Length: 332
Image (cartoon, rainbow, N blue to C red; front, side, top):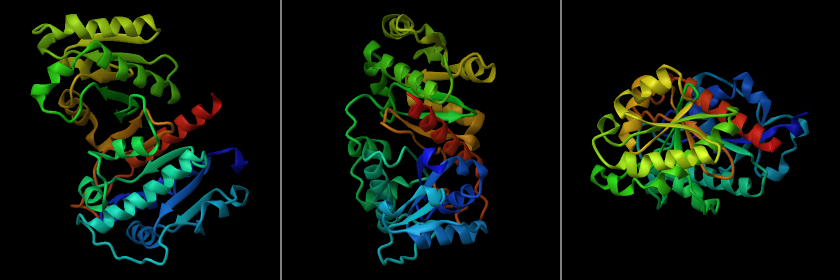
């Protein structure tokens, strides 16, 4: 039976943060038995996280993926220590932490390219440690996209309570946003979030689209670019609606349950609403990659690392989304 399950790689996250303790807790959850689980990382990091969480695990340890036979069980630990037994200090950014994360991530992505892994769920990364460890990209999504040879459009999705968001622009100065609000740029995240939500089990996603200007009327972008993008989406069968004024969009779309997801024009117009309604429940989905890759949306939380206070819910939800998307993708 385990041979027909989805193979999911679990990465422990930054060893200096709350990732290892969260992933130790996740491994005790029944839902992980629905998949063939391969935890990738260093043995001592898992042990450290398990000591904090107070959990123990019946994992089969291997040094190479080819040693795994899922007919013998469905949870393995692929140890990348190679004799290293580094003691990572909690609550500190470091080159060593970043290198450990990148080693595990690179191996998981290599296995994905070989179709040995069908989804990846990772504990929180620390961007500073990643850069110290050698990541030359602005974030992990761009690192993954290059590693997986992605040429088409990709973007980050943020999720609370299975309500999804995508954005046309992301980490750029606000003064640069208007020049990026073009029909051809707006239609891309609309298409991508529609496809991703279908993989997550929503048959006909109701896609809301935010305005750029106050009340959707104090500017030309709505009429000239945003509405034409919405109309084009409708023509290709997407259930798109808008533009919704930013200040009430989350009330209309999320709180009143009129939509399943929302596409916005810039970072804070989405993130402010999302975090106000569900900062402690957020999930990040790396959209546009050839396999589902998810993580809790919160950071490494150095202030509570090692205290066994981290909330498991976002990690649990991120695993559920990765599993559901991978299962549905396998049926296509």
